[in-house]
Image (cartoon, rainbow, N blue to C red):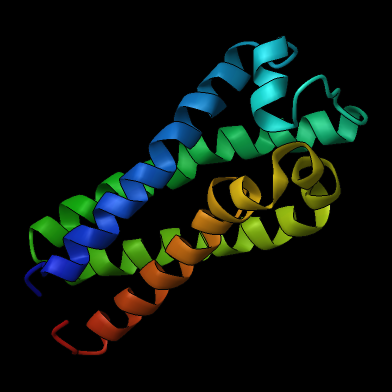
Length: 149
């Protein structure tokens, strides 16, 4: 299962999408109440709505650092080694991205969308994670099924 141009395009899109998230999540883990962290995560001059909102966001940051990013890195290694497990892990990371962003659509849209506007919201703040997750999941499933794309 040698990696193809499509594989590396999806990896590059994933890196472009996930690296800024990891940086913001690290800032959040180090200083969850800083003005800059709150501006990045919930909007300019916004506050955490309640303790549950803060805890959910903190849990998501830890999950990104402890689960999603290591799985993404391992998937890239596996695909570079032409191993099927790399595509399986890539599909898992795509599924995680879809899963959490469907949840965030309902939890965060009413707060983040107004402060960011439709272009930023439907691209980086929500859209790219959904689009990339769906593409990674679909592509990996097709590759695991035997297609050579």
